[in-house]
Image 1 (cartoon, one colour):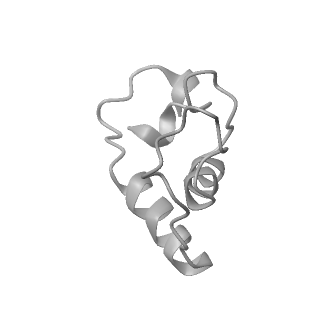
Image 2 (cartoon, rainbow, N blue to C red):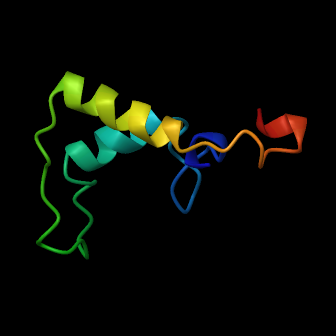
Length: 70
């Protein structure tokens, strides 16, 4: 149900799944303590759209009982 849980990240600073995908596609934010293995993904626009569609497809509408999350 990740499509229902915006905003994202520990501080809630990314408002959409698209923003999260773009954040990781860029390789994070370059924090001084960021692990060196975190690198840009190089996803195309089509791949990013496919990833978002996949994540949204995992939403279980039967699970949602609070209208605030629709």
